[in-house]
Image (cartoon, rainbow, N blue to C red; front, side, top):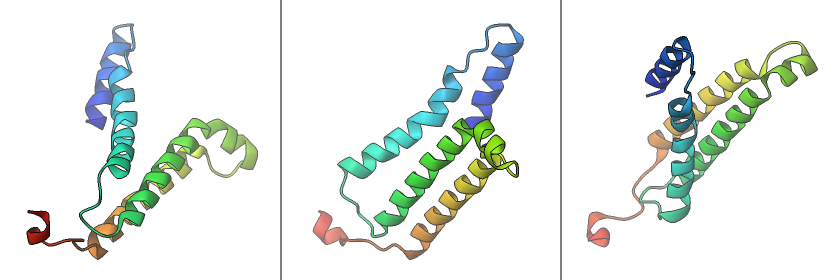
Length: 112
């Protein structure tokens, strides 16, 4: 989805009207949906803290991307864009930890 949204943006930019609404949708709808899922549905597995940490890291990554130039001009070593990729990678690692360590909070008999 991400690559196709950038491709669509590129094609529309080449045609002179640069439509990046699909890109924005791909970038911002999933985290909003994940936040709603965390808030509205009780977890079926342990490890919710990992998912919350990953969500917060993703939000931080978006902020680092937003302030890319300001970060570079402030520290002159690395840009916000580079830090975004590191932070997003950490978010993925936290999700991996969650998947490795979680277990069901209830049995099938309790669910049914």
